[in-house]
Length: 125
Length: 125
DNA sequence: TGTATATTTAACCAGATGGTTAAATATACT
DNA sequence: AGTATATTTAACCATCTGGTTAAATATACA
Image (tube, rainbow over all chains, first blue to last red; front, top):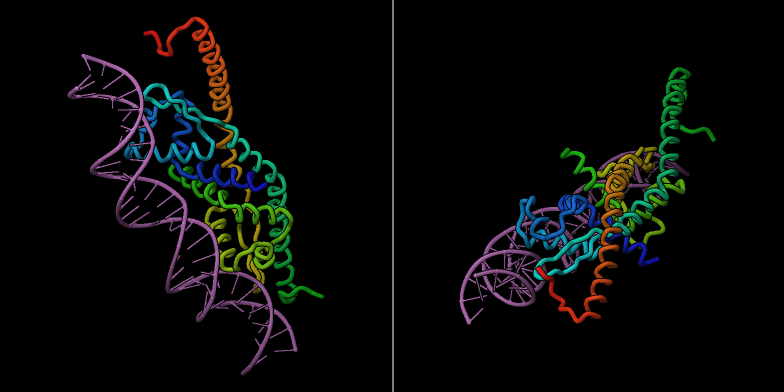
């Protein structure tokens, strides 16, 4: 369970940087070489190399050496676990959120009624 | 589109901390007061207060003042956008990943065949 | 062997992050 | 008015993050 949490930490953290998300999108397009991945980004190659290391440490990509080139591939497993974590809670959150909506509506009505009747803002008993 | 990226940055970043994810889970359980949210965490109240601020800035929670208490509520909207971003790419990633699998299998077979035939490890080109 | 290419590592830096304690603010209670 | 409770803000600190440039490493090519 420590592991699970650490995985989510690393995954969400890796996904929090726009450059890294773009890299993951480039990988969708079939780009694999580090130099090619780096090309569109307005930063140095070492900077991109660092981003790749972050993605690799988080397990979001794997690397295969072919001669002097490194071929980068996505491993979607941890990202899907992150999505699962969201999905696991989304329904309850949505429910809570809807409850809040209706609560606020009701509070609005209560307030209007209270004002009309000259009641205080305090709850009774 | 800048906005969209910033939202994802803030959302994934907010989700990358285990304390903040636990807070979101506590909110599922109906906990709302700051003090109650802070109780299970082995850190000071100001530390939790900071985490709440991060969640609030990212738009993951909203806050309603009731007297001296702050009632915290989840807003699932940005989290669902983060999930959407993952979902939008998951299928292609999965496909790429499966392709890699079959590539590696094939390479494994090629290698085995090459060894049997006394071929070198170099590509013949 | 010498040179070019692909990529990482090292050293450095500014700013962000996540924690602390002490103090401030706002509200409630008697 | 005075005290207690709920919460944030301020000031501080160590560590992490994301970038830089220069150098190192590994492979390819002639």
